[in-house]
Image (cartoon, rainbow, N blue to C red; front, side, top):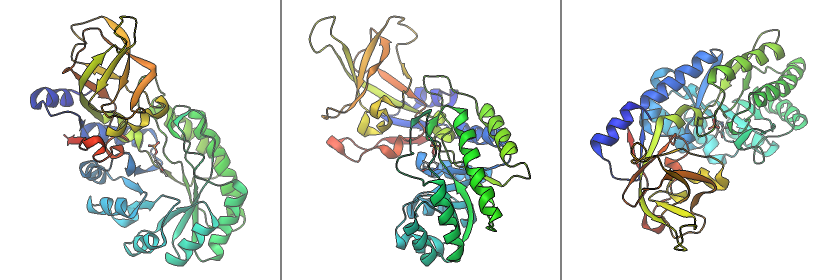
Length: 379
Ligand SMILES: *Cc1c(COP(=O)(O)O)cnc(C)c1O
């Protein structure tokens, strides 16, 4: 948590639950990735947190954007991004959305199937397209590989067909899985994409770009490699697999860019041992849970860090099950990975959940059990 967020929480005492995001952290994350991989063009994956103040800050820094829908494209344009800085990066697009995006000046579309290719050829004639490859997502806490991406063999056919349909087969992309903590995943994926890239260029196709997707991790509980380590390894892989000059390289960080910038402030509703005995597990119920934005606790995949208002005065700790406020049985955040919390914790205490800037505000349900959406503060 940054001093700016601490000060804001102490001075403003905002109603809980709320998300507080320090925009300076977003800026320093952008700069750190840019410095670690100067050859990469950053397309912020706006689904991680589409707050206008984040988009505006990134526009000012020179970022481009990966949008997944017409609405996300509009948000980028509204924040000041020009259409040439926006990629329509969802392999699932309605025909009307392709046409409208094209009318708005978008000229870069992803695909991973023949039908999507034909939709783009018909509704955005002449556009630049890139094909998403399915790659290994090992090492990622939040994998994406089952739903998207195609095989090398089919990608080859798709790119050749794209040329025949009058599109510009522009490049290849992949996503190594979100919260990817293994550097090797990028190296393997670059090697795979490079082989096809060279093969297609040898066939006369004018491929120019490799899109490395997102995946760069945020620091939660476990240690992660630094962005410098990712940058150095990726640069080495690019040199190795593109010895005769590098293609244009796109990066689509989402989580990395905003995760560390946000803190959720919440309140303890109840601390209970429901069996009544001291040996029964201690349950801590918060005013935010799975439906209030902490959806990535599904399967305890993303493991957030907790700070309480008693941490400095009470050194005793015992492991707690932590759950949300709704009347839904799946609204349990951590039961396998219990959270050590002070023994004196009780209802009314504040709890801060760290590194919650990504994939929280937009995962929040609207009005489930009558709880209002998460309040957001961008400072
Ligand atoms: C979600 C998404 C990203 C961002 O992934 P992170 O793991 O948050 O960096 C990047 N590219 C595409 C196509 C995505 O769908």
